[in-house]
Length: 356
Image (cartoon, rainbow, N blue to C red; front, side, top):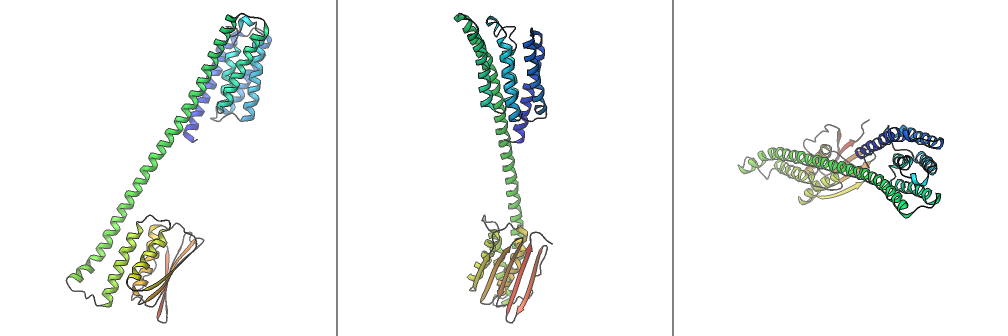
């Protein structure tokens, strides 16, 4: 499920292993009365040692090893039980009936359905020895069944409790991880909002002198340079608004915002996009669209804009019928080229996600 719940389950494995070892040494060793019981005891101890190789390293017992170990446990417990007289079954001398179930839990704790089936089979073999050995009255059979069911029920409850703890640990980890993700998303949203406010403040700070000049008539709106400044400021604000939109392809969305404002000014603009969408950092998108805005503002009547994405390279280009007075150069990781083509101007901004 996850590392935390796996560690919890690993701790439960170790606890069951140590409890089983303590029961076998402290309570079962003193009850060995014949050769068969000693052989069965040794076989169970060997299974426990083999399982400990994985359990003590916080790993589940591999399925082939667990299956082979379960067969040995069932055979050993059956041999030890069937050497006892029927009247001593599940009594003080019957150390194997209860102990074998704990060995099965050590081996099959990660496979609860198989573990439960093995516990039932082990106790069934024990009952078979009582029923098949000699006639017994109903009270003796009833007492054996009650004691056997009590043992199986306790071991099954232990198995169920461990699985519940494992599941709850996984759920707690997922809830904690989800809280961390929510906190992280909230922090990112707050940071994005703060950055947006800062950019809006910076953009408005650059626009306010222009608005003030128009208001006090120190700037003439009929002047071509003033109109270009107004168009550039409007395009920058429009692109800034688009930057905050949640869209699948932010770069094309922001380029489209610049194109849309140019068309509203009366320009005929064609936009061509090729290549699959690729993640582009916000600051890089600003550097890619900055020269485009300058080119569109300088255009007189028409422009062709293209967005080309190939592998790790992204290009934003524009051909317009006007040339800006002061074409901006590239900055940071974006290279910008400007060329005059007669009465036309060609611009290209290029960014490589993995620089050479």
